[in-house]
Image (cartoon, rainbow, N blue to C red; front, side):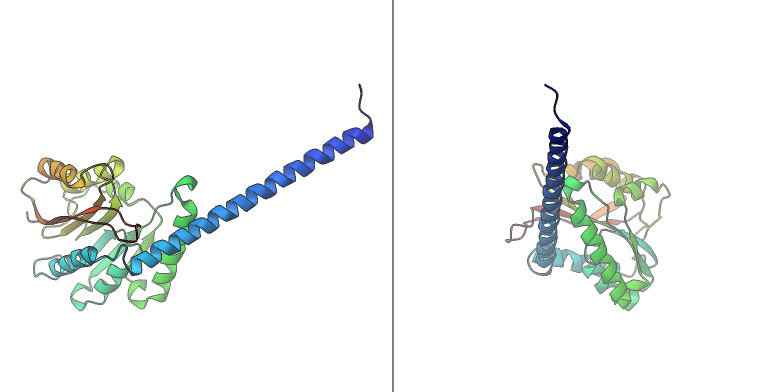
Amino acid sequence: MKKSKAELRKIALKAVATRRENERKKMLSERALKAHRTRRLNAKVSANKTTGYESKSKKSVKEIITELLLSVTSPKIGIIPTLAFLFSFEKKLTKIAELSGLTFMSFESARPVVQGQHETELLVKRQRRIIKKTSSLKSRVFHQENDINDWLLFVKQPNSFPHIFTDYCGNLIGKTRRAVIHILKNDLVQVNGIVWFTFANRGMSAQNAFLELFGKYAGKRYKIELLENYAGSKSGLGSPMTTVILRRIK
């Protein structure tokens, strides 16, 4: 039976109303998701200030690195690629007169939406504000919205950096594994330079995985200054980690 113009108009209006309602629900859902990710990042930042990233174990690691950087033979001029998060370590290092020749290339890469793109965008904005407001960082930190592994894998020249700080906090697999091999095999740091890695132990032993790569690609050119497992924070935001500090000796 053929519908009248009035009935067709009613159906069309209903379809428009349904579409608008669906769009409204989608928008509200996206807002709620963004709000959730904002809260998650704030919790992560809060943990970093108390029991999270800045745990006693990580603080002791940074103290060891600082001592190695201050050693007489340690390179003290050049750019250090780093995964800085909120620049707590970089702030400390830029205030040490003996290390005034070192600058930092900080990396933070965007992730797909399902893995927290909004959270990453907020973190990048935070990082920019920190650099802008901190006088000791303004001229010493260069911020890259890029994947540090992609950047390092592009570098082929040996002795390109005085030191490398790759505090990954992720598993030693995929592109990270390729970058670790590339750093060691091609001697990207100068002699007496430091390479700092941090790996997660999610479903694997990062220590065993790293020692396998070290034996295969580092030879006798590197010395392990520290190889240590440490527990995540009591807050539950942290995961069991393995930290590695290497020094190139030849």
